[in-house]
Image 1 (cartoon, rainbow, N blue to C red):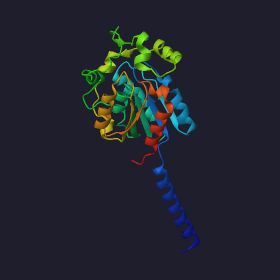
Image 2 (cartoon, helix red, strand yellow; image 1 turned 60 degrees about the horizontal axis):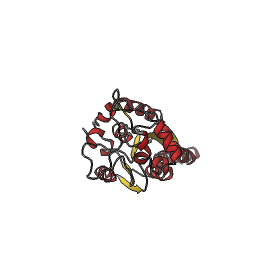
Image 3 (cartoon, rainbow, N blue to C red; image 1 turned 180 degrees about the vertical axis):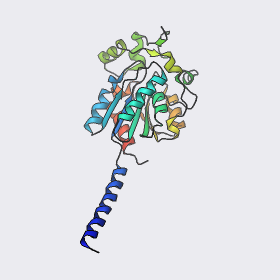
Length: 252
């Protein structure tokens, strides 16, 4: 074999090896989707950890006006992300990622104390029959088609382990949650076609931990349990970031 042929063969082999290595690389893009009553700023702690560890992170500011609107915003974020995406949803954000997560760019879906609905289910249907003895979230009657939590009870129900001054700010900066968003039904849940991960917040007073475990089990999600409130992504960002990074590193 000539020297030129040997060099060409070696280059081809290196190219194949490099391509194989690239295909085996973990996903480095993370898209974070917040839930109802809050905005994307609550992901700040998780964002900083992921950025420090080398991830490209996008925080979706979904309007929580309707499920269709929130899915559209999330899909735009997925489209703009580099390469494979780990799609993460907290609370109602779990409904959004369940529908948006079927996008081909999404490698896996991560639920953080979140709703993980099946086809035809919505937040409204999932909360219709709470477990016996489960705490009742202090949701006020709708005004102009939007819901809010009672500010005086916000910390105890949503953010019991968050610093009091931050919990107070979260209560006062609530984003009205559209009733239409609660009623939006998932058509094809991502957890049926993508690897799923779930963090159960064991001290959650918004989505009962037994309900979280049931949804995680149904989704056959890799599950961890963390002592934390519904706002565990705020109070314990390291635990949340750790799970996201495990999902990113997993070989699917």
